Amino acid sequence: MIIRFVKLEILPKHINAFKELTENEKADILAFEGCSYLQVLQDQNNPSIFFTVSHWESELALNIYRESDFFRGNWSQVKQWFANKPQAWSMKDTNNIQ
Image (cartoon, rainbow, N blue to C red; front, side, top):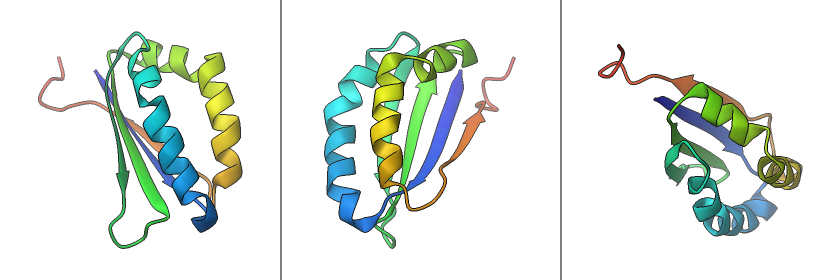
């Protein structure tokens, strides 16, 4: 399993739109084959900072999602709202490494 963390800094004027978009599209993302979990977190001290945390059965499943028309459409909209370049990490659960 891959646990994906993505840090996004959103321009203050787009925070509400970002929150609405992520809430509306959460079910669509979870419907992608291989995605079993998705959470969007907002920093309590800096409301412009968000993290998404998602669980993917494999790197292949994550890449299929990232290459989908859905992701490309979503990303093209959201990237206009960025205050800084996003950062992403794909992690493995050390308790489940085989």
